[in-house]
Image (cartoon, rainbow, N blue to C red; front, side, top):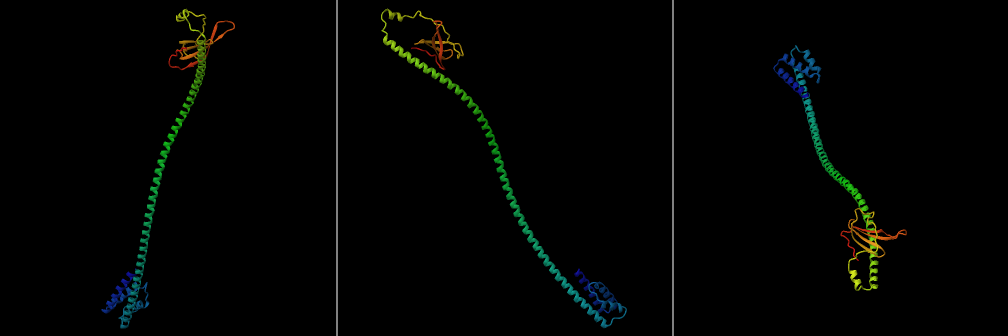
Amino acid sequence: MHEKLCASSKAYVSAVKAALRSHRREIAAEIFERAIDVLSPDFPDPTCKSLIVTHGDKPLENMHVQEAQTKCLTLESELESVRQEAQNERSTLESELEYVRQEAQTKCLTLESELESVRQEVQNERSTLESKLESVRQEAQSNSSMKKNVRRLDTRLESLAIETKDSIKELTEVSKENSANIKGLRKLQILMKNQTTAAATAAAVTPPPTGATASALSRPLMGVRQRADFTVKVTADKRTPSIYDVQLLPGGRLLLADYGNMCVKLFDTQVSSLNTENRHQCISSLDSFTNPLIISL
């Protein structure tokens, strides 16, 4: 605004000076009046305006021309000072603007560096969180497989516990059967030992057979003195008895090999008080033999 004002004032002042030099008083007065009207808001000068108004139609004297020139010079000096102040203010504003621009640029660079550092931190944090998430996902899969294995092992343990209970029951039954078999074998061993001792004693006290007695003993036995009827089937038999061999033991005991039920039975003779007929009762039974048992004494 000041520059426009200065340029307009300078142009009008130059026009006034040129008109005064060419002695064109009317034109100079009119131009000068216009310059005063334009410059009056910022530089009021009632003397110059009254000079134009009073002597507008009269010839200007040299004194008035000199005063006008003086006023013009004064206006020019004031315009120059205004121009200088405007130039100084413009320089000040430009320097302040440059300072503000540099400061804004510095702040922008600082903000960009901070933004880049924050972006890098966010990227690092995101990478860390993604790695943690992946490890958590893998751990969850591992825990899931472990849970499946645990459930499978629990089921296996339950089945093994049931199988173990069944096996314990079977082994207990087998142990009971084995204990009974052991008892029967012990009894049989005692009987065999007693029979061996009795046979040895009888052989020691009995003279050897001679003559007709020897030939009679060598012939097949045709009959027996006593006959006893009894049943060889006992409660534990699962099939019909099939007697493979029979031995009479001392004391009236009878040893049978039952191939049908795969066992050896020991019977004892009991004499009833009402009847002299022999009765036999099974007192022991040995089970689980694989081959037919041939009893020979």
